[in-house]
Length: 245
Image (tube, rainbow, N blue to C red; front, side, top):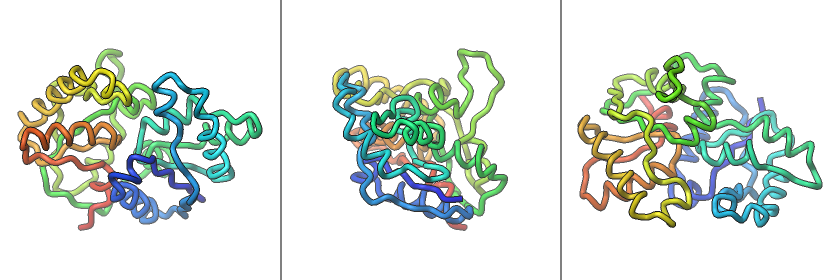
């Protein structure tokens, strides 16, 4: 299958290793991966700030770069959800519609499309799992406690295939970290307090790393960890799943 790799702008600029790990992981699993070189922002920051009308250029560029692929995969639940719900192109409505159907968050793609049953990976550390809101409540990557639905987690399903990993959960497993896109800018104090609460629960479990599927959430938590002088590190789930034995 022909897969296009979509690397969100903040990953490209600040966490390129996440994009590299995603590419390597997909190739290990047999995908023919292409990276459209003219891809750029998906337009989510404008939409989050109430200026969705200003993202038409982003929409047109996204369609230009990603139309025609069997699947589009990205290591970011929030950007994937934005495309699924908001991508439109007046000049190419059918292409935009196909893209909305064919774009997947990484762990969603691995479990639902590739149906991965085993991974040749090892990560001998204690890891805390963070569920991002977009992934959990938007893409339904894991169950939500408030719905009383059957318990499931696609990211945890994959992490449990990694050898020697010790996976732990915070007490309030599906609570927001406080990042929330531009929320962390407009409501800085609330955002930081929420992030500190998340970190406190993970550190109570004495984890070495905090992982998740959204680098944006992890970036928010990493900033707080560094300011607190914590030894706990953040790592994207793609980097763990791609870790070599």
